[in-house]
Image (cartoon, rainbow, N blue to C red):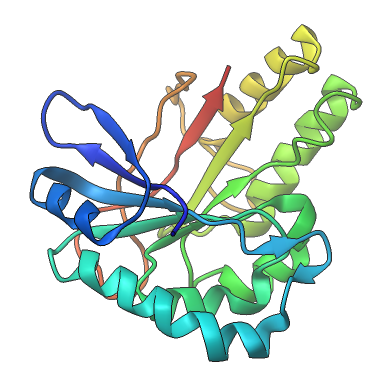
Length: 226
């Protein structure tokens, strides 16, 4: 059985969660524009079976699964924990339109090399840092991610998952940093006036680069699970 398949409901903005099975395809005609998948493929230091075996044994299955969704004209969003940067291009080949990778497990340099200008990502910021850092360090963390991965075309999302162990002042610092840097417009340090941020909100506007989707899709996103 596959990990849960998530869809955005077309009616009333509802979201459904169902375990994957062939019968799950019957909800696709009523699903929204984006279908969300969660399947943790990586560990802290790499894939459980390594990239070559993953490509041999699992990539064909993912390609077949996502092809069913793509055939309906919908987009595929995939979450996966762990170090998976080695197979992110493979996931894109399988039909994934945006990937939700972890900052700490993959490393910012690897994500820049593999993804910038190529694969849209919704970056999961370093939740292991959140409980212990100072507000100033959290501001630096968010700014580093934005400055490193920003492109005028878009293609970068920021995801913040906040647990109950995170001090209130750090929660405030994270939200303020995302509010500030989501209006970042390049190395000149310019910011767009009037930018705002709302917790628990995804902003999905424009898909950059030629990844087969076309049209308007992803730009900045910011999500806080409180």
